[in-house]
Length: 110
Image: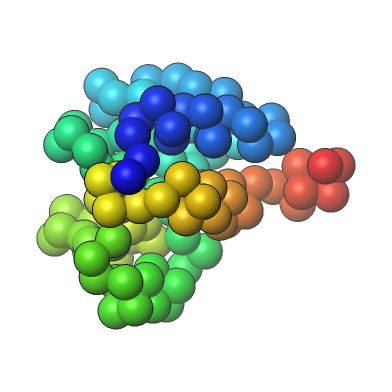
């Protein structure tokens, strides 16, 4: 089971990441691009994916962990149930979100 504190700890450990507010909730940015944010629904995280196919693979492969709503139709992000995720899996999901949003320069410089 992961918590919002785990999200913060793991996200901020990624290179060139900082925390800001977006849509009234804590959000995590690599450079100028948001890659994850805490949803207004407690215990839910919004994470970017590399594309819609990647998002769909998570939704189909691990529906107990990942879901979406009509609000995110056509958007390469997925909603994550934090209470169903291990810290290890959360770290993987955040790393993948970071990878999807980091610029080539940032990825090259790490």
